[in-house]
Image (cartoon, rainbow, N blue to C red; front, side, top):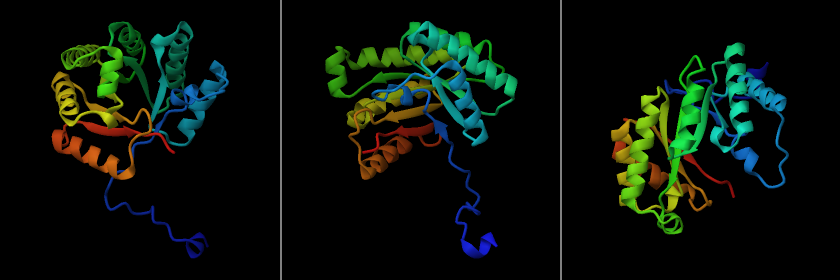
Amino acid sequence: MAEELMYNWNADMGGRKRPLIVDDTLRDGLQAPNITFPTLAEKLMLIDCMADNHIDVVFAAYPASSETAFSDSQAILGHINTSGYAIVPEFIGRTFQQDLKPIAELQQTFVAQIKACTFIGCSPIRQCVEGWDMPFILKSVSESIRFLADNALYPIIGIEDSTRCKPQDLKDIILCAVESGARSVTLADTVGHITPSGTQTLVSFVRELVGNQIAISVKTICR
């Protein structure tokens, strides 16, 4: 009966794998204006909902941001473990040791590999505001990615404001990350600058640069 009422374009993907689904509720959702921070019980309930809906990766937390964030991260990992969920947890931190050490500590308690995204801004305006130059950025990227890899984590380089970054700077950062062991790159449209055609141009640029060596993801702001 259902087949008579509708045609399912999703039935055959021509041998292609379905897209990887990442849920940012426990990360970006907590940065929205006028939000109410969920309790740990509510966070675990959200993990249950994500597992029920076949979410692949959960952006679980920024564990270095507070003691509560770290303890909640431990509880989330324990819940995923005991529930036998296939969902992969991902944690974030700046390209600084104090942000990455808590993630490495969490990995020691988890039965599977955790994804860890270390991020840094790279656009001219971010470099100006932070007082950074490219040698500093490249050194930070290299050291942080190597630290994550050395601690059995799945290393991801997150490039803040990458949609306003100069092509040569973006190229240097990505190649540095790949050489240091990064397995994925996240291109962040931090201020909502990119358009659909710009996204296509940016991703094509990165894909031509790295081929299939690493995965590519894009975080954009809907407007």
